[in-house]
Length: 92
Length: 360
Image 1 (spheres, one colour):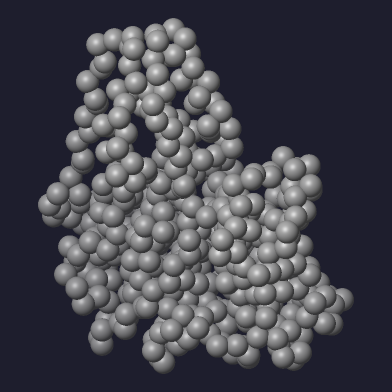
Image 2 (cartoon, rainbow over the protein chains, first blue to last red):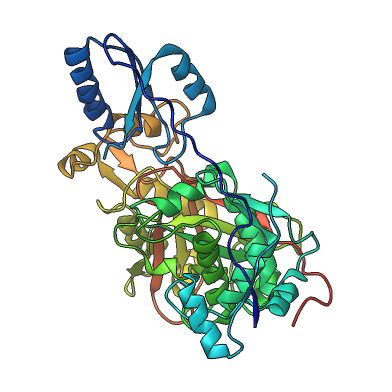
């Protein structure tokens, strides 16, 4: 019996990791919080550890309006220009 | 990215062995599927006028596309007849809109399932059930259209339970969650008419539904008595959010409401105004957030939003209300939106006519 595959025929998308940072000292931090309860507080606490241990500065804090949707492209472009690394994660 | 041709597998000729073979491929929702035999898939595709490679939905997280061909293969597996196929296509075209956010609503711990509501003459033409047991079981069209949606999410978009679908407890609707709006005896304009489609055009409405809550009321004889039961269910501390709602009124309840001259809009206003909790109560449940209160009471707020209270939804038309079910029984239902709030907004779409000769 010949069966058609029920899978997508789209070729697998290639994903690449960003190159690792050479160091953390003095870098600019961005925070992208997902808008859920406690996300802002948790991510700020994490950022504070980098401030204390590596002299980083928190430059930009951005909130997503929709926790489960990707951040808008303009937001990501802006963040990429203003910060050296980004802290993001799920609060709940 | 350009798509490759659909793959053809050689499976055992014995039907039962082929069903087992489909299990081995990981293609099922846990129940046996109809093997997607080449000729059956082609017959399903005859219910569409566009080329089989036409992409009707795109998954933003994985980049995977849904072609008509893949949709047809999964529709066969679910047990659909070709005349059901335009409903599935229209549903995915609606879910593909950014506002529906179908990746989030299918990946989330919230465990929603896409509720499919078919409105208009097509529902009867393809034998859908809007009457006794409309949510199931027992009707092939309702059961298999909803199941095809789930199989597409699984097989095409790879929303796999425990891996990419992280629903905390799941939802029985994730097997199938598809109904028809009851036209017989419905005193209100059908959804497809209210949505603005031309006479004779049927529509599908898709809603990321977070479950099913039965609303029992056999003692009420006035609209307010019936609807306060619905509103109370909508506003319980486990359900109340800024999210949208679906309410399917049983014919008994609808008769009480309509005999008193209540329109759909009046019911929506009553439900929005009544489905509420005080700010203090919300704080007591640990569910109050300033930003949600501000969204509901700030600029552009509904005139029915009362200061000091959180209502369900942002405005009355966030509540879809129509009729469904058997003639007997004071059992309506409320279906809450996925998880918290407004991360998925319900969508509707016209259902294309099936080409002549495509029906089995």
